[in-house]
Image (cartoon, rainbow over all chains, first blue to last red; front, side, top):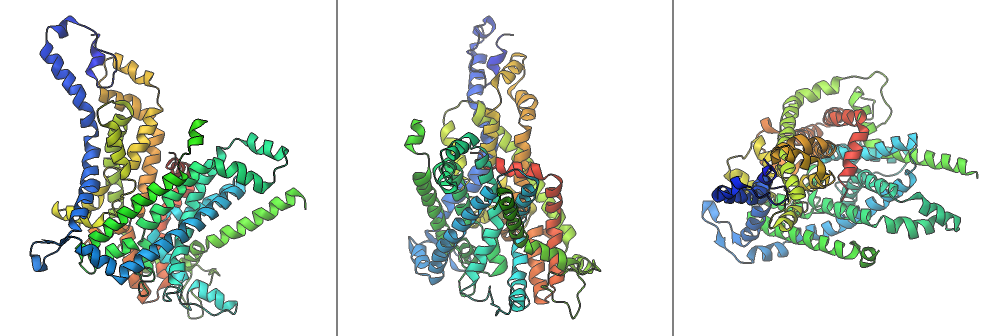
Amino acid sequence: MNDVASNHGIARHPPAPSRALASAPHARALQEAATRVRPYIVIAPALFFLVTFTYFPLAKVIVGSLYQAGFAGAPATFAGLANYVTVFADPSFHKALVNNLVYSVATVVPSIVLALMLALWLRRSTRINHWLRAALFFPSLVPMVAAATLWSFLFMPQVGLIDYYLGRAGLPGVNWLGDSHWAMAAIVLVTVWKNAGYYMLFFLAGLAQIPSELQEAAMLDGASGWQRLRRITLPLLRPTLLFVIVLATLYSVTQVDQVIVMTQGGPSDATNLLLYYVYENAYQFGNTGRAMAATVVIVALLVLLMAFYFRVLGPREDDAAR
Amino acid sequence: MMPHDRRRLVALALSSFVLLWSTPFLWMLIAAFRPSGDNVAIASLWPAFEPTIKHFASALAAGDFGQWYLNTLLVVSGILLVQLVTVSLAGYAFARLSFRGRGTLFALFLVQLLLLPPVLLVPNLQTIVNAGLYGSLAGMMAPYFASAFGVFLMRQVFRSIPRELEEAALMDGASWWQVLWHVLLPLARPGLVAFSIVSIVFHWNEFLWPLVVVNSPQRYTLTVGLASFATGAEGGNEWGMIAAGTLLVIAPLFIAFVLCQRHIVNSFMFSGLK
């Protein structure tokens, strides 16, 4: 009975020597093999789906980007970097790449600054603050499609809510989504509106972890509010900041629902983003090779961005030394 | 100025900002219940004091919301059920079992946090087509059956549980899966609940992937349905109906949020614990 624990891959205790086991070396070897294999069986279900829907498609998209689809069901032919050449020569792709850079910066920076400011203002746990936080968080709980549908009306020329109230204030209206100067700003506004409340939550959680003695000590030393923010709050919020920046950047590349609903990348590619370019090429233009090459570009950008962030904002050596 | 007065002023300014921030929802609520008439500006935020449910009736007639609700519920719960199994098992293995390649495999999982299924939508759709799942609800669910976020979260949760508890159970002759089922999972409940809430909200809101998998209105989820419904109604300028349709999609989330706000907020905060 005392070798029960050895039946489980978990127990680190060496199996107690036992006569029964010694007399059956075969059974014991089998059992050890089972113990060694078990962890792989336990992760197998998750691993299967991970491989099928992340690594297999990743390989497929890299290989596929090197092939040209045949006409009318003919087999695809190896095309080398031809798809990349076409993609990088495609003005729409240029537009999407530049737009996405603008869009990422224009959504990540304001939504994080706003979220941090709101978290600082609402950090005290009062009844009214709870209500305000809830109202600010709620947009991130609803589908982007629903948000985009509502904002589509707000941005409607003339009859829409913004133009209606601009008109009542005696100001001229704008065709927000139809004007290539304004369409990107409109999409950016929707994204910031949708996500700022979500990021605020992380800053609130981060702020709650900062010991209040630190603030009090700094206050007694006569540090101003701005000094306390610069010297104490922001450095201690570093991990939160890194996490939120990574999350917001990821969203700015992987979330294009509002573009599909509100502008379809238009007018004249003014709101075309990389993932929308992929979607459009694959499902509207039927150009799979191009879509795959563009996907590889997105993946490469994501990997580079994350590596960059962790280098610049990741744990510092002086943090580790402490 | 007294600090007390200043605090009041800040609260007032913040409240006004939040009210402005909520304008899209306020307009939705007002427009959905306001009777349409010739002398009513649809954009006005002035409510009708004789509300109507006419817009809801026409929204339900124009869009198959019942079917879309059902499809969304099936997709969301199907994904969650499979995820709970895969994520608990893998989280347990990474937290408690030692095996060759554990670190590498775990890192391979974390990469999925970057390469979400929408990014790989072209090759994933080919896989779904080849598997004969194109146009099916199962095809909408399958890419999400393994969740890197869930594996990571459950690993953290299992690691925070003291080992003595399971060792006692092992001594009593329990097998590893009995330990997982009877000891670890009950203790991991807060983690499982947090993961479930985040998963439900995420997949309830998902749009791009279902959009490319779906091939008939019969299989629309709420988001895909709403987008097509709104496109149709915008042509007829039926904004009251669009407000009502959007409200129908948002309502369950709003009710859930009001009922268990603390739970939902904490779960989303939990999703940032790294």
